[in-house]
Image (cartoon, rainbow, N blue to C red; front, top):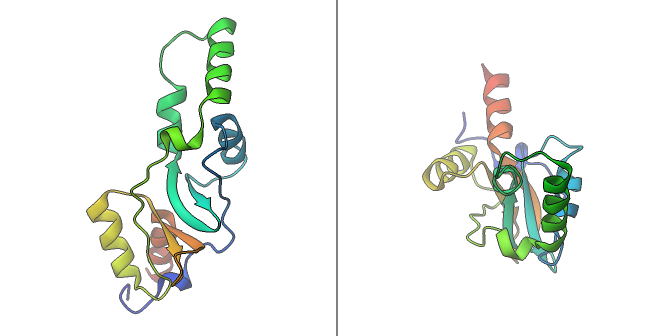
Length: 141
Protein backbone atom coordinates (compact mmCIF):
# COMPACT_ATOMS: atom_id res chain seq x y z
CA UNK A 1 0.00 0.00 0.00
CA UNK A 2 2.72 2.50 0.99
CA UNK A 3 4.57 1.93 -2.28
CA UNK A 4 1.49 2.72 -4.39
CA UNK A 5 0.59 5.97 -2.67
CA UNK A 6 2.67 9.04 -3.47
CA UNK A 7 4.02 11.80 -1.26
CA UNK A 8 1.69 14.17 -3.13
CA UNK A 9 -1.27 12.23 -1.71
CA UNK A 10 -0.46 13.09 1.92
CA UNK A 11 1.88 16.10 1.97
CA UNK A 12 0.94 19.47 3.42
CA UNK A 13 0.95 21.99 0.61
CA UNK A 14 0.63 25.23 2.57
CA UNK A 15 3.89 25.32 4.48
CA UNK A 16 4.96 27.99 6.94
CA UNK A 17 8.58 28.92 6.34
CA UNK A 18 11.25 31.11 7.88
CA UNK A 19 14.33 32.85 6.59
CA UNK A 20 17.94 32.59 7.70
CA UNK A 21 17.89 36.16 9.01
CA UNK A 22 14.79 35.63 11.20
CA UNK A 23 15.45 35.54 14.92
CA UNK A 24 14.34 32.66 17.11
CA UNK A 25 11.80 34.82 18.88
CA UNK A 26 9.88 35.05 15.59
CA UNK A 27 10.22 31.32 14.93
CA UNK A 28 8.87 30.37 18.36
CA UNK A 29 5.96 32.74 17.78
CA UNK A 30 5.28 31.03 14.47
CA UNK A 31 5.37 27.51 15.90
CA UNK A 32 3.46 28.17 19.13
CA UNK A 33 -0.11 28.40 17.79
CA UNK A 34 0.23 25.46 15.42
CA UNK A 35 0.73 21.74 15.80
CA UNK A 36 3.66 21.34 13.41
CA UNK A 37 7.13 20.51 14.63
CA UNK A 38 9.30 21.33 11.61
CA UNK A 39 9.74 24.52 9.66
CA UNK A 40 11.75 24.78 6.44
CA UNK A 41 14.21 27.62 6.00
CA UNK A 42 14.00 29.09 2.50
CA UNK A 43 15.90 31.50 0.32
CA UNK A 44 14.12 32.58 -2.86
CA UNK A 45 11.76 29.60 -2.49
CA UNK A 46 14.58 27.05 -2.25
CA UNK A 47 15.13 25.00 0.90
CA UNK A 48 18.43 25.91 2.57
CA UNK A 49 17.77 24.44 6.01
CA UNK A 50 15.23 23.12 8.46
CA UNK A 51 14.45 23.79 12.11
CA UNK A 52 12.71 21.32 14.35
CA UNK A 53 10.76 22.01 17.50
CA UNK A 54 13.26 19.73 19.28
CA UNK A 55 16.15 22.00 18.19
CA UNK A 56 14.36 25.01 19.61
CA UNK A 57 13.39 23.27 22.84
CA UNK A 58 17.01 22.37 23.49
CA UNK A 59 17.92 26.04 23.21
CA UNK A 60 15.08 27.31 25.39
CA UNK A 61 15.01 24.73 28.17
CA UNK A 62 18.63 24.92 29.26
CA UNK A 63 19.01 25.68 32.94
CA UNK A 64 16.55 25.42 35.77
CA UNK A 65 16.46 29.06 36.77
CA UNK A 66 12.92 30.33 36.15
CA UNK A 67 13.36 33.74 37.71
CA UNK A 68 12.30 36.93 35.97
CA UNK A 69 15.95 37.74 35.30
CA UNK A 70 16.52 34.32 33.70
CA UNK A 71 13.42 34.73 31.52
CA UNK A 72 14.63 38.17 30.46
CA UNK A 73 18.07 36.76 29.56
CA UNK A 74 16.43 33.98 27.54
CA UNK A 75 14.13 36.42 25.72
CA UNK A 76 17.15 38.57 24.86
CA UNK A 77 19.08 35.51 23.64
CA UNK A 78 16.16 34.43 21.42
CA UNK A 79 15.98 37.92 19.97
CA UNK A 80 19.73 37.90 19.27
CA UNK A 81 19.98 34.35 17.88
CA UNK A 82 19.18 33.87 14.22
CA UNK A 83 17.88 30.90 12.26
CA UNK A 84 21.14 30.63 10.32
CA UNK A 85 22.97 30.03 13.62
CA UNK A 86 20.96 26.94 14.61
CA UNK A 87 19.29 25.51 11.49
CA UNK A 88 20.20 22.10 10.15
CA UNK A 89 21.76 22.73 6.73
CA UNK A 90 21.86 19.06 5.74
CA UNK A 91 18.26 18.86 4.62
CA UNK A 92 16.92 15.61 3.21
CA UNK A 93 14.27 16.43 0.61
CA UNK A 94 11.91 14.34 -1.50
CA UNK A 95 9.87 14.78 -4.69
CA UNK A 96 6.07 14.64 -4.71
CA UNK A 97 6.03 11.63 -7.06
CA UNK A 98 8.05 9.49 -4.64
CA UNK A 99 6.19 6.69 -2.86
CA UNK A 100 5.24 6.85 0.80
CA UNK A 101 7.48 3.82 1.29
CA UNK A 102 10.44 5.83 -0.03
CA UNK A 103 9.56 8.70 2.30
CA UNK A 104 9.35 6.37 5.31
CA UNK A 105 12.70 4.77 4.43
CA UNK A 106 14.41 8.17 4.12
CA UNK A 107 12.99 9.33 7.45
CA UNK A 108 14.17 6.19 9.20
CA UNK A 109 17.58 6.14 7.53
CA UNK A 110 18.32 9.78 8.32
CA UNK A 111 16.42 9.90 11.62
CA UNK A 112 14.29 12.88 10.65
CA UNK A 113 10.63 13.56 11.35
CA UNK A 114 9.82 15.48 8.18
CA UNK A 115 10.93 15.87 4.59
CA UNK A 116 10.50 19.08 2.62
CA UNK A 117 8.95 18.26 -0.76
CA UNK A 118 10.66 20.04 -3.66
CA UNK A 119 10.09 20.36 -7.40
CA UNK A 120 12.62 19.92 -10.22
CA UNK A 121 14.08 23.38 -9.50
CA UNK A 122 14.50 22.48 -5.79
CA UNK A 123 11.71 24.91 -4.82
CA UNK A 124 9.60 24.04 -1.80
CA UNK A 125 6.12 22.78 -2.71
CA UNK A 126 5.15 20.98 0.50
CA UNK A 127 6.26 18.96 3.48
CA UNK A 128 5.58 15.38 4.54
CA UNK A 129 5.94 14.38 8.17
CA UNK A 130 5.92 11.17 10.13
CA UNK A 131 2.48 12.23 11.37
CA UNK A 132 1.24 12.36 7.77
CA UNK A 133 2.50 8.82 7.18
CA UNK A 134 1.01 7.49 10.41
CA UNK A 135 -2.33 9.17 9.65
CA UNK A 136 -2.45 7.43 6.26
CA UNK A 137 -1.49 4.10 7.79
CA UNK A 138 -4.22 4.45 10.45
CA UNK A 139 -6.78 5.19 7.73
CA UNK A 140 -5.75 2.06 5.85
CA UNK A 141 -6.07 -0.12 8.96
